[in-house]
Length: 165
Image (cartoon, rainbow, N blue to C red; front, side):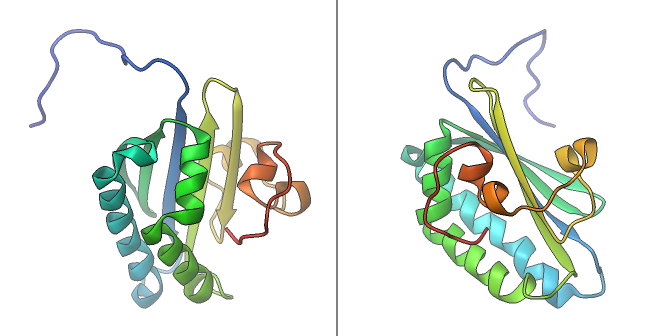
């Protein structure tokens, strides 16, 4: 059993905080060749982040939903998260592999993420080949195009170089 902290506590964190929820949803359990590589991609990314704390990653919690794994990550800032998303070696490989293999016309596996900038009161989300889930289920879905095409745009930022999510 985990080291239980007896009594009532609260988090000691102060300052900027970003909560990043990311996961995968299996839409066709029989298509293991489609979703297994996606499922296996998260472990190396999390290991890379724990080894390189200077990247701004604070910690992660892992959950298993009936449709697949979900990871809740805590980051020092949105800039750190975005920098890892655009430049982290393990993430870039997984992102490109998913876009090339799984997302190319396949509905067997979906991925999603939701980003919450706690102190700024901002959030963004994207769902690719998933049933309604999380904030998208709570509030409804709209196409991720135009000003909603990238995470930075969904957060109200300026246009940036186009990089597929």
